[in-house]
Image (cartoon, rainbow, N blue to C red; front, side, top):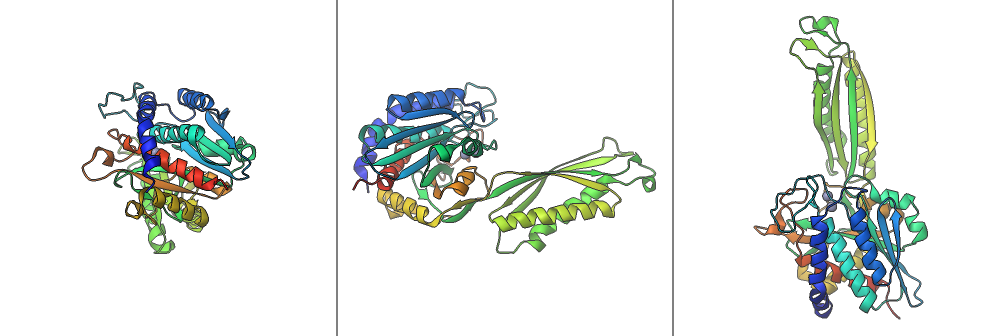
Length: 393
Ligand SMILES: [Zn+2]
Ligand SMILES: [Zn+2]
């Protein structure tokens, strides 16, 4: 166990827990992370990093070059909050009504800042360290914006790593996974158009309500009949809207659909089958369907070599009893997936707490809070990972 490194970071942790709570108190939504980004940039500059702000909107990159090492490492944290009314009652609870750090991105930012400070003042490494603070992870695609803005052209990285806290896993336990680790997310809005009319004369109409109801039921067969039973997929019709009165057949009905998959081929098959079923269903009722298909986040795939390396770092830091080498995949989505489509790397989880502990409250819940015991531990992980990746000869 790397107890001295962890002890060092624990001694510094009051300052960074303070920063974490300050960010928590001032949460900002996707692409509105102006205060957070300014705070990050100001700290990094003070510690000697070369800093670029405004990359991909409100993204920040801090670069530190040391020695003549040729390797380039990227570590990424996210900065955005969620449109949730905080209900924790904590002294540092959000002062922005309706906005809350309910996913722990305040903690991810603080962990990486604590590591940045340690690496700048006492880090033993040679090469180039790129610390990436991205905006808009929560559905805004901040990673894509940063990549489109030249993130990996300006700051080439041989590998890139990121970490997310996870309630339900004991505090400080690390969980890694090679291969597909988080699901893709796609969305579709379906408008079924028929012919409206009098509710007492259905034969003079083409009823989109019946077509929509049948379509919802038919879509249930995609996962059960089209997808390999050993693969994972989710088809959820989360909203269905049509009509206003019991005696009026409306002219149209809409469905809102959410889709998840852990495999690129399954994702493609979902799209193909869902579009075919919707078109055929609508036609069979004399209606027409229009589908607005919106691609969300890609499947997050951790590459083997970098995941093996990330595991070794975790084992060295906390020992085998606190590391899950191959954890289960998650059906949630994460836009770090897009960085992993460009650069090899790995995304790992750090336990936020389990059982009856406060840290067990799930993310995206108004009662959630990041576990501050992870500030020092997460920072120690990043320091050790950077020092091992950018090893001195
Ligand atoms: Zn989230
Ligand atoms: Zn998150």
